[in-house]
Amino acid sequence: MNQLHAEGKANGAYIYLIALVAAAGGFLFGYDLSIVSGALPFLEKYFELNAAAKGMAVSSAIFGSILGPLVGMWMSDALGRRRTLGIAAFCFMVSAIGSALPHSIFAFNFWRAVGGIGVGLAAMTSPMYIAEISPPHLRGRLVTVNQLAIVIGINLAVIASYALSFGGHWRWMFASEVIPILFLMIGLCFVPRSPRWLAAKGKAEEAMKVLTKINGSTQAEKELRDIQDELKEESGTFSELLAPGIRKALLIGIVIMIFSQINGVNMMLIYGPTILVEAGIGSASQAIFFTIFLNLVILFSTIVAFWLVHRYGRRQIMMGGVAVMAIGHVLMAATFFMNGSPFINLVAMFIAAGAFTLSLAPLSWVIISEIFPNQIRAKAVSIVCCILYASSFLCAQFFPMITNGFQTRFGHPGGAYLIFAGICASCVVFTWRMVPETKDLTLENISRFWLQQGNWSSSE
Image (cartoon, rainbow, N blue to C red; front, side, top):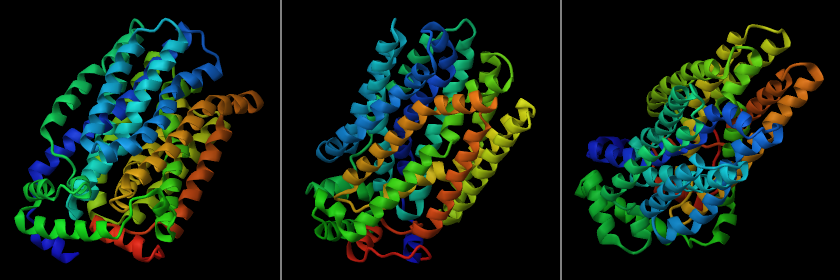
């Protein structure tokens, strides 16, 4: 581990440039899933949506996201990470145009689902690609670039929604996505293919060129040997996912990603304006305005996460951050139960969302991008992402109905946030008991451990 830091020959500027382009997929992920938040009050009125239809308008893109990893499982292995991101960009483009033009909620949901396929492809491929080009000591930060891009996408989606909310221009909210899509399409023409994918495909010479440009020739030779040696220990088949060590890694990835979606904070962000309107904060435009501040908190927290990920272990950050998320949910529930000021709801959202973006939001992607062996990484990540979006779909679909149920029975939705607090507490326990520490280890060292042992104590 010390040798990794002592060599210090990584071409930082080049690596960050690659990560920036790849993270444009993350930006579109955040922008695409968040733009509907600002449009929702106008969609509800335009299409006369009930609670179930409102949930479907939000979750249609998430439903498409479930299909993305299933396609990406084959695509990222057969075509490569870079080309898969290009196909994701095409799905985003078609969806942006289609979602801006519909005259029925069915057509709207269809085009949102197409964009969701792009979301699913980008979500699984961007962090995986970034992890595969990153030196070990920079991997946490560079994968967090993807999370930063997601957060920036969320922020700009909220700002665009607010600017276009005057006059109810919800169609332009979706059309505005075309600009960042063009950036991703053009940027992909200038980044290399993943060196680990190239090595797995027998293209050692091209892999060596990429690794040399990233790390210098001496480190590149050593890294390529390690990659090739580790690849010999893998079969790359689906049956390998059931081997004892890999099975445990897959379980950890699946459970962490389910927690990342059902913890309640994502629902705060997606339904933020609606929650604040229900809490009595004012009109739809005023609610969207206040969520700009919420997203600035998220942006600041994500920037702080760069420092945290580099300085502290994955497990420490996860457990501390998720515990604070639980506190935010309890405060949210207490505000509803005690009929407090809607601005206290906003503070509770700040606490929960800030803690989420300091911990579970970036680290869930860091962990799944690095925890699996090279040959089966795409298969494992696609399975994890498929289950992730299935969880997200169910949560987004049923959140309005759950809160409406509490609203009908108790006069407020506070009980839903107590449920989310309990989920967060369960995530802290799971992380403490099951999640290993992978900070500063090479991908090959992590892979070899699971392949050879499969019984990593969480205290290591």
